[in-house]
Amino acid sequence: MSPSRLPVSVFTAAAVGTVIGFGGTVALVVQAGQVLGASPAQIVSMVTALCLGIALPGMMLSWRLKVPIILAWSTPGAALLAASTLGLGWATAIGAFMLAGAMMVVTGLVPALGRLAGRIPGGIASAMLAGVLLPFCMKLFLVFPTDIPLAAGLFAVFLFMRRLAPSWALPAVLIGAFAVLAVRGQVTLPPGTGLVGELHPVLPVLDPVAAISLAVPLFLVTLVSQNLPGLVVLKASGFEPPPGPLLLSTGLATVILAPFGAYGINLAAIVAAICTGPDAHPDPSRRWWVGVIYGALYLIVALFAATLAGLFIAMPPAALAVLTGLALIGPLTGALTGALTGAMAGPKDREAAVIAFAATASGVALFGIGSAFWGLLAGFVALAALRWRKTG
Image 1 (cartoon, rainbow, N blue to C red):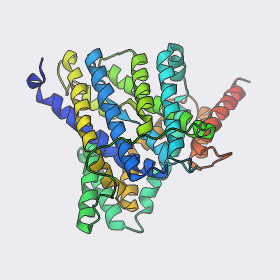
Image 2 (spheres, one colour; image 1 turned 90 degrees about the vertical axis):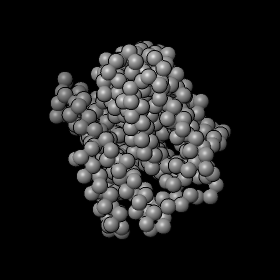
Image 3 (cartoon, rainbow, N blue to C red; image 1 turned 45 degrees about the horizontal axis):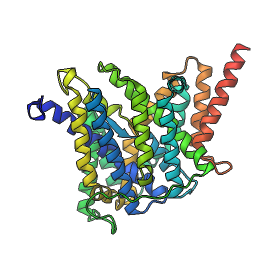
């Protein structure tokens, strides 16, 4: 079947997925680049590389496996990076991206590691993620005293759209934010970003501190919060592709594109639910076309990545904080649910999740290592101690 004979739903599902996937969290990606010390040109390269990493492997996998493989950048990973307070530098961050991608490649190559990764206590990983996300959601409300029209207006749009059309809440907030900023004369493009997407390679710096504080948490949160749920979404839609090639392909894409700023390519979950169900195409054997068209749309986004990223780079910090906070309310809700109820069997086990959450949210940094690592470590130690206490 040629693309011209496909039902309209295939194109609309891919388009909706692209708008939601890109527009919903690109502000967080830009913020992560700024925190890590990337220049405007390097942030443009970051967004361009991520879009290419979503587009090309997704199209190839969809075509070869005849399954709608929907890829995305790691939203929890971007939050983890944006929460970093270590000041490691962009080149060092690039090295951490490559290490995280390499760990995903190894997980895809060795089936035993994939099975072991699936046994990672989901509650601990979710608690760590919730601790990373919480400060961003809190910053949303800290904008109210300084710019209540912007914060209250966008918050109202978010709540209204969550009730009316949940999938379109974040794009609606994005449109509202740019409308307000346009009226204020605050929509500009920063110098040095250009008009089309560009790739600027950086020689990675491999650093032990970055490996522990960024690479390991980035790998774990991407695996547990993105790739494993993405496989569940595919299974729920009637597709069961082998997980090894998917993890291998996304890991390789991350390693190859990391020098240009791609910090994490992974399976999508929420967007995949839009693109892999019967609403996208009534015939499951033809639904893989959605993955191909979705990837083609991301190639177009990559072409205009400089303009799109530039708008967010020049955005006032208050507006960026509101957009980021609203975009992470959903992931924070899911992380808290997973930490306290999704994977924990008893009340004492939940204590370990709370400890991991508190340690991560505290922002503590010891020996130059950030709170995400200490949150994971505290959670694992507490879980082991509490389970030993119960059996003993």
